[in-house]
Length: 372
Image 1: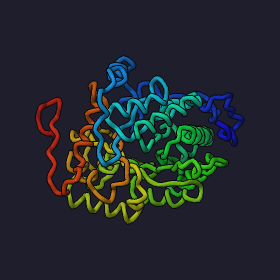
Image 2: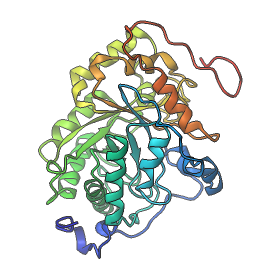
Image 3: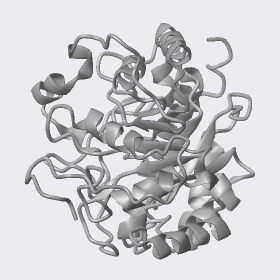
């Protein structure tokens, strides 16, 4: 891929492999701990993941039925990053999200040119768009530790390089933690870190935008309110194409009302007045295990948590959001959970019907009762 090797940080080279661009040393999370926000499916034992892999099943005889909305799910890259596109299509998606490398390690994924070409081919074949890439959870551009922050800048540059190579439309980034400093200083460090990471890379030409994701509102984390996301977007615009990704679970546990009809309308009004609904091209659709305002980021199956089915129905049928993509990041507790969550979202889309009919609540698969 000519031109992609320019401007690599600290002596990183391609050697015909895209993933070496970051030039960082391997590192891992503390043993036995899954970080807040990490997809539970990513922490499963390999045997369970293999059992649940849709590519282990016979291919569908007919193309999955799609909706007028772009609906997808975070999809495994096991066997090669390009395999995620085939998985997404078989799951009934017309959009999808991936990690372009391990979310638990600094060591980058070794991405080959033929994989990028195959990803583009499969996406065109199955009309899969957008492709959303979620940044490694280790990256913290707001951090105070200079060694860790430099690793974060280099790792984020690698994320941008891989996203451009794969033809992704969006790269989602958690704003980070400013622990040990002031919020304003953390904001400045994020802006400077992104500017340094993307230096020499043409995101606009690659039609790639960085999306700042709202957070659950934990102490010292940036992005816990719509105002903070709007401020981040405004500060970052001179450095790169930037917009926002809004997570329903994070919004709910941060204290915003998504559950009542009136509360959700007020929440969307606040979002539009700060970030702008037109500046939210991707929604992460996750129910929540924790209560509203708890600031605990624990994702749940759609309709089985404290948010419930009606708010997702309202989101998916709001004409103001018709250009957005809706991506689930729900856990995989049992084989087929990924497909079930996709189908639940798709079933809520009202195709050519007047809005206003109250959706049915989803029945819990475990208790046989109705989820509250």
